[in-house]
Amino acid sequence: MNSDQTDFLEEKEITDRNVPLAEKLRPRSLDEVLGQPALTAPDSPLRKMIESDEYQSFILWGPPGSGKTTIARIIENSTKHRFVRFSAVLSSITDVKAVMKDADYMHRHQNQTTIVFIDEIHRFNKAQQDAFLPYVESGAIVLIGATTENPSFEVIPALLSRCHTFVLQMLSEEDLKTIIRKGYESLGLEEDEDIIGWLAQQSSGDARRALNQLELLAPYLKKEPHKEIKQLATILEKKTLYYDKDREEHYNLISALHKSLRGSDPQAGLYWLARMLEAGEDPRYIVRRLIRFASEDVGLADPQALVQAIAVKEAVLFIGMPEASTALAQLVVYLATAPKSNSLYTAYEAAAEDARKTSHYGVPFHIRNAPTKLMKDLGYGAGYKYDHDFDNKYAYQKYFPEQMEEKTYYIPGEFGFEKEIAKRIQWWIKLRQEKDKK
Image (cartoon, rainbow, N blue to C red; front, side, top):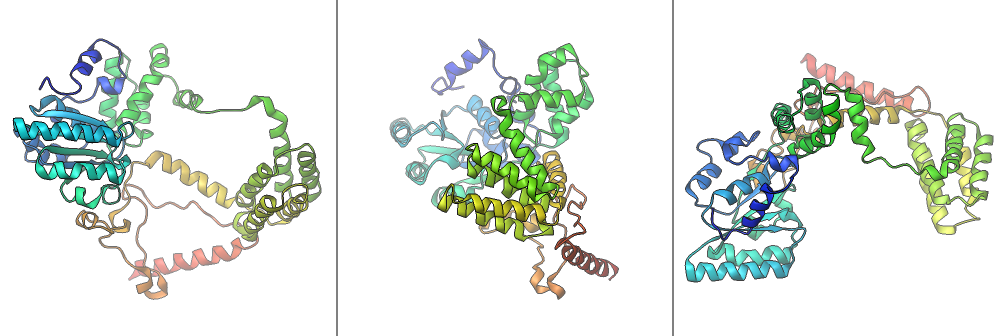
């Protein structure tokens, strides 16, 4: 490793102090990197660059915890070139220009190329990205960028055209299990396959997240290696949940209003509304909760409920109190007497539960947008059926991730407008069944 590299002292410090588990277990070579077979294959362009120590500029594009920074560290620790790291969050245009000046000097007078790694390059603005361009062109620097965002949109075209793009995939649950087991070994914990599987599943393909959570749970697992997963989930939630215990009556009153409307009692609804307004409650808070009620407890049984709620929100903001009290009363009576349905609420909760479990599943390629050549070359949009070109404006195709079965979340209620929605859904089901018979 070149002694000129910027993190030489940092490497020594790491051995002298405690570091996060994710950093301690970071792969030291390309062979240790999991979940990226296209990048780590024997004949891959990335491996050839590392083995030959001859680099061309490239962008590492992938989700959090997939290995972008790890690959940069592997290059940093193996290259004989000068290596400089930037954080797009912390670095200014002045920092960029200073490093470019040094790199240009080293290139001109010592024929030395500087490898510049930019973490979160999408956070650099156009001016900062422009500053790299002439030095990439002259060969003074090799640019390595890491981003979680689509480089087609976040990297300026002139710079992107001079960089190869390496696409990293979310880690599979099996890869995450392997990484978590290494974490167990490093922490001296007794393995529990159920807990390992749970951590892998809910880490959304992010190795860093999985190890951070394991490290957080480690004190509990040392005492009780086979602790119930529900208890572990509660421990993680306690680190983020917040509850204002000093205003219990505030929440009691809004709960009373909400439940009165759900129970279709406009008289009680008006009473609790008045209790809140006369006590000086912020009307904007009340109307926010009523907007939520319009979807959660009425929903598509009466689509006008949400329209009414938004209109009253505008009235509250426009005329203020006390004049807006009658608009709020109008909304309370409307919502109390509207047909009720929680179909949207239960549908979303079921979808959200699946989303949390499967957020690492990619969007099927045929329904991805492909506005750039890079995205088209990667297969985005291939095979998509444009429904307007088919009979009845309907061409059945799967919209769920490939790894998932199709699910039914929304089931229309039996009251109000949802009866009409149920007819529409049945019509599409019939069309699909007819297509399946052909």
